[in-house]
Amino acid sequence: MGIEQDEIRMEAEGALASGRRKRRFSRIPMRIVLPNLVTLLAICLGLTSIRFAAEAKFELSAVFIVCAAVLDGLDGRLARALDGASRFGAELDSLADFVDFGVAPAFLLYFWSLHQIPSFGWFAAMVFAIAAALRLARFNVMIDDPNKPAWHAQFFVGMPAPAGAICAMLPIYLKYSVVGMPDGRFFTFLEIAYVLGVAFLMVSRIPHFSGKQVGRVPREYFIPVLFAVAAFILLLATFPMEVLVALTIAYLAMLPFSIRRHQALTRADEAAAGALRAPESHRKG
Image (cartoon, rainbow, N blue to C red; front, side, top):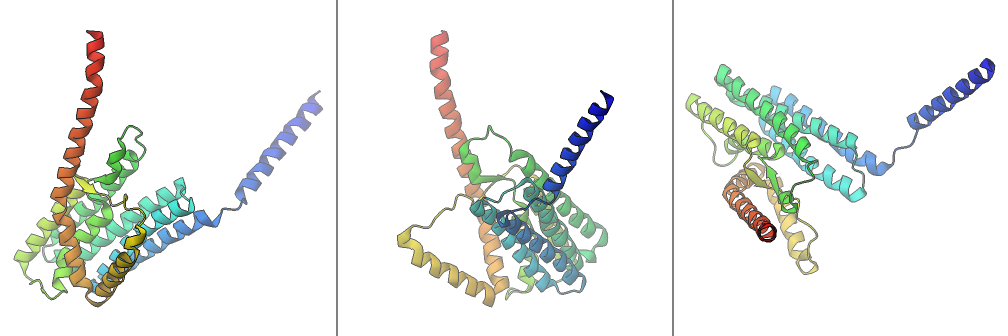
């Protein structure tokens, strides 16, 4: 009887080990691999941005962070288009966002100008990186909330980390554009205040338009949209800093409109909920 039990146990252990080997060497489809490769490329851009910032190549460092933001928008859309979303990809994307839009901009801003006031400058850089980490952690927690109304998908709670990184580098764009932002300790204090303001927008609950609701382009507008995209790419390649200045200011100018839109939808939601509760109160009465 003992021999039979030992044989059964050995067979079970062998089957379990075989199953583990199969899972270990199971093939992962390319539709899952490709979005993660894009995310890894974004991490490489963020790390290279830190290298260029340390080498005082500030303009190139800023461009690499902007390119990482573009890839951050592409990997999610690519995963949804290929049905390749995974928990591993979501975790990797969060780590990439912290490196690209928390650590890299903080180092760039400090090496560029904030080091002129070391204590306050490093404090602002650390606060910005911490704000990006908190913003990403809150996003990961809130994304699984099943009780959110459908219209909440139109907004981000707080400024997204990629937008925060791009907005925080506005003084650099101004410096290397035709505007030519002046130097000096006074302007460094202004930059510190501005960076802290962007950090506050990231950790706040102020709604920002998400842009995820942009869907397919109607057929009749395909050619104009294609022309506009091509013209924008040419402008960005020819006048990168000036275009980034315009985009950043336009994004910040949209903030009051996103707040008003969010408040209007919230009031409409509350009114609809009140209308549903009214008949129930009459029935109870």
